[in-house]
Each structure stands twice: as structure tokens, then as C-alpha cells.
Image (cartoon, rainbow, N blue to C red; front, side, top):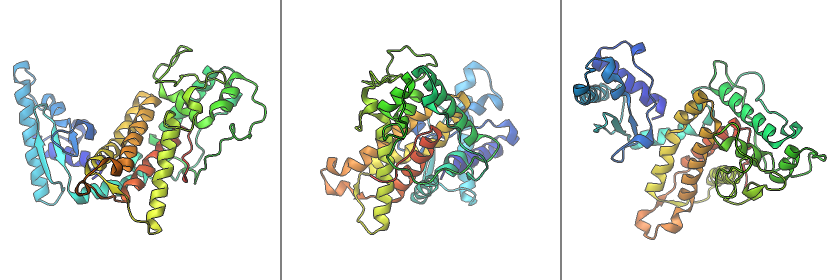
Amino acid sequence: MTPGHLEAAVRAAAARALDLAPDAIPFVWPRNDHADGGADAATALPPRLAGVSGGRETDRRGDRRAEVRDRVAAELSAMRDEGLVDFDRVTGDGRGFLNVTFTGRQRDALLAAAADGPRFLTGRDWDGEGEWPASALHEAGPVAQARRLARADARARVALAVGPQAPPPAPGEASWRDPYLDGGHRELLTPAARALGAVGEDSARVAFCRSVPEHPRGTETTGRDLPVLPSAEYPGAWARLTDANPAFRMRYAHAHATSLVRWSAEGAPPPAASPDRTAAVRGLLFDGPSALDTAARREEPHILVRYLEALTSAYDEWRTCSAAVPEASERTAADPALPAAVAGVLRTGLLLLGVSAPTRL
């Protein structure tokens, strides 16, 4: 079950339970990181509706939230009995949220949907006209100007992805080659161009989009040895092909995931996996559409960067968990659908930042 499918089901249940017009029901993304009790997703729609459907008095607000929560849960269960929706169970909590646990089939369907990153994250195919915005960062003078261009590119790409017109298709396979690191630009004269020659375009774009302030201090960092404005004199970890470089980590995770899918198709045995690590990756995949929507509404590319980093970290733990799980009984054969899903979301998210996603290790 995708976030969009669950949101539509909860919205329909709320309309039936509270006798509300569909346009009176606010859109609320269900999220995995809000879920309690091992559920796959939680929705905060019932508390939002407590005021809409009456009972605004302060001393009754908690009771009203519980009443709306229970009525929507009962209607959602009735819809399942009618064959209109499917899930394993739904429970309420003290916040007034509904926590939904998926069936195994729904979890499989989520992974299959996420493999098509553009449709999963934006709800449509990318088959429109035009090109993705891409400024020539080396033409900037100061590094701060290149940062402004990269952030403007990311905002424009995200807006194009979720806007009214169909976005253009995503590019094909990418390699690890970088035009600034591999001699594509011979004359790197400005501070911005020299910074690109030190860290590469992909690392630079991630560095420029990772921080929150629009006008950071020159010495500001977003982590250990991660300058907001990497320069030829101080590139920091952005120049390294190690896990200390968030851009490298995300791109490597994509290359690993696509390679795992390819090896599986060629008959290689699947690696071992821990169910807990699998659930963590699946939960972050579920939250992808919400993260992109938030980044678009707030026009803050760092939200997308941090989401992709979190997904990368969860995938790294998943792919290395066999060495950390001592008991064979705690391991299961990894589902090749999971790396395909991770690759689909990472590839799409990196594209929206203007960053290439290599397909081979």
C-alpha cells in the first residue's frame, strides 16, 4: 500500500463516518515515522477533524479526538469487510492518531511501487516536454553564488516534478565520471570553478543544498569536516570518496542497489537480511512522497537531502546486517524488490538535486 492509497482510504472512511463532504477533509500524509506499536503507518487526520466536526471546547477536545478516531477506525474496518480496502489491523492511540499495519502483500506492493521512483514520489509518469534546469555552476564567481544557483536549480526541479505539467523524462544510466574532476573543464578560473575542480559537481550540489540558511557564514558546516561553502583551499570531506562524504554515500548506495538487482536477475543468491532492518528501509520508503511534498511546499531543498541521507543510512544498515546478526535464525533471504525500490527513490531524489546516480560499483 502506498501513502497515496492509504490517504485516500482514510479520507473515504472519514467522509463516511462523519458525514462530511470530501472537500471539507484536509489532506494529511500518513507517515511511518509517526506510527506506534510496530505499525507500518500512522495518520493524524482524526485530530485534524475533531474541530471540523464540532466539539471545540477545550475541556472536550481530548474526548472529541478519541471519538473521531474511533469512528474513523470503525468505518475503515467496515470498508475492509466490504472489500473496499485491505490491511492487517488498525488501532488508535492517545494522540488521536490511527496506526495501520499492512499485510505482507501490501508491503510487497509498496516496494514494487517505489521501484518506479517518479510515479511513486509524484503520482504520475515523467513523460513531458522540456529539460531539467541545470545552471553552469562554474560560471559563477564566488562559491556563494554557485550555491545560490544550485539551490535555485533544486527548487525549480522539485517544483517541476510536482507541478501541474508532466515533467520531462529522467536521464538514462550514469557513471562516476565528473566533468570537473575528469578534465572536462580545463580552465577553472573563478573561486566557484576551482571549488568544483576540488570536489566535483555532484558533491558540490549536495553540499550547497544540505544546509538550511540562505546566507550562511563562510566557516559554517553541516557536520564534521563538511563546509557549507567548500572551496579549493578547504574542500573538506566533500572531496573524499568515503562514507564521510554524504554525496558519495548516497550515490554509492544507488550503485550498490542497482547492482544487487542486476546480480539477482543474473541468478546470484540473495544476501541475508534482518527483518528489523528491512522494516526500517520500508518505512523510510513509505515516507518519501511526504518528504518531497514538504520540500516542495516549503521550497527547502535540505529537506529532500536529509531524507535521502536517512534512506541511504537505513539501506547501508540493511546491506551490512548479515555480519551483525549472529544467529542464522534471525536472518531471512533478502527480497530483491527492496534494493530495486531503494534505487528507484534514490535515483529520483538525486535527479531533483541535479546529482547523477551511478548504476555500477
